[in-house]
Amino acid sequence: MESKKTMPTNEHERFMRMALKEAQKAYKLEECPIGCVIVKDGKVIARAHNMRITHNSALSHAEILAIKKACKKLDSWRLSDCDLYVTLEPCTMCSGAIIQARIRKVYFAAYEPKGGAVCSCNDIFNIAHGHNHQVLFEDGVLQEESSNMLKEFFREVRESKKSKNKFPALTDEPNDLFLDLDS
Ligand SMILES: [Zn+2]
Image (tube, rainbow, N blue to C red; front, side, top):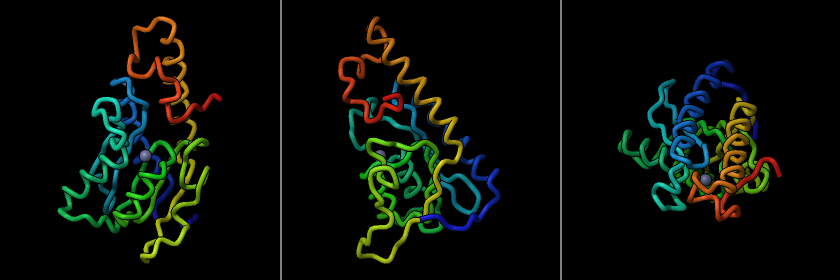
């Protein structure tokens, strides 16, 4: 669901660039480069990046980790009046967590054609969830920057399959990658 913009576009891009910085940190760890920041009253209150391999946890998506940090910071499970910026369209799990945390609005960059739950494969924020909370979203903020980083990552992973000296946790299991923007 689109909504009226509450800040100038460049402000959204500024926060998305911070999320992209987080994605870079994941990239350096040989994790799929996805980053997230949570903003309240114009200030970043939490930032995180994908740590699935590092934590050996399917739950360690950037959004989940950022939500945990934001809840700790605010000392509340409820993140009303908070906006979440993430470099890739959230999956079903993260979208569920975003609804549960009562996030006000989600801004995402790249689309996830194989598993994006916001608009690519599902419409999860617009399904009735039995509690009166509607998460708004805006898609495609710095889409190209994020897509390029992901494509570069997957290109490196594919190339490293030949040498097997990098991305050991990913190279033998291409299906483990939850998206492949080139396919
Ligand atoms: Zn997720």
